[in-house]
Amino acid sequence: MTEYVWDKFLTERDRAVFAAGGFGATADRGKRPALLVIDVSWAFCGDKPEPILDSIKRWRSSCGAESWVAVDHIKALIDRAHGRGLPVIYTTGEYRDDNWDAGSWRWKNRRRDEDVDRPKTALDGNAIVTPIAPGPRDIVVYKQKPSGFFGTNLASYLTLLGCDSVVIVGTTTSGCVRATAVDAFSLNYRVVLAEEGCFDRSEASHAISLCDMHAKYADVMKVAEVLAYFDTIPSGEFDLPKGSGASEATRSVAAE
Image (tube, rainbow, N blue to C red; front, side):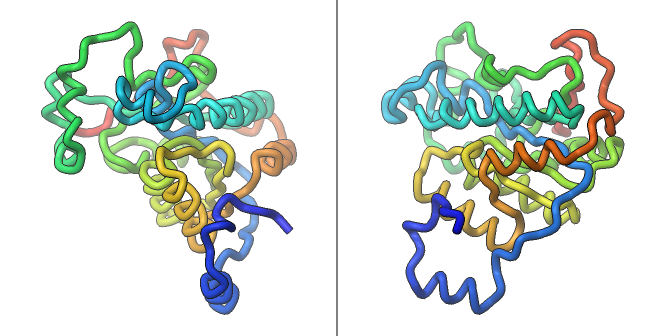
């Protein structure tokens, strides 16, 4: 029986309710999946593996050392997707230098204005971390709200590619990953979450969010299972961008 990260948080009542209600059934796998890499940027990973309480002193959104463990798993998934010719689509944020368009994000974090006042570094917080930087045939979607679908062209790109399903990794599990997964489910895509490829600053939120999504909206699978799933997809099935350099990764700017 598969062991999940949320098992230690569930009561016997919870287990009985899920079983009686029929929650957590395994869905059929999609035949044309895209890999969605949600917000794996310097702002969420920090510039090096270190304990989270140290990392958030400089990177207020950092998820600490656990993010870099997840990056290794995400890289394995990206490499396999590239090898099979599967679409790899990244999301990350984009805001004005004066932070005006942060909008409602400013209501719930008292450190948000540090994004303007912090001394500039050589690293752009919204840039995807170097070990998994987008390649020339990958797609990058820029967003301003939690879901990768909200105010972006993500759904239209999936339609253009003929995708029927998405495999989601990234951060935070309880925030942008969850919002993207729920929207994908709402748009009738089959949704898979690769457990070790998702990460969060809160251990409890990470575990329970995966539990909730597995119960209702998605299949949570181990990375090894997802890699095996990718191997079942015929190679060369997708008409991917024809870029020849990393700077040519497709760019979609969220509506302001």
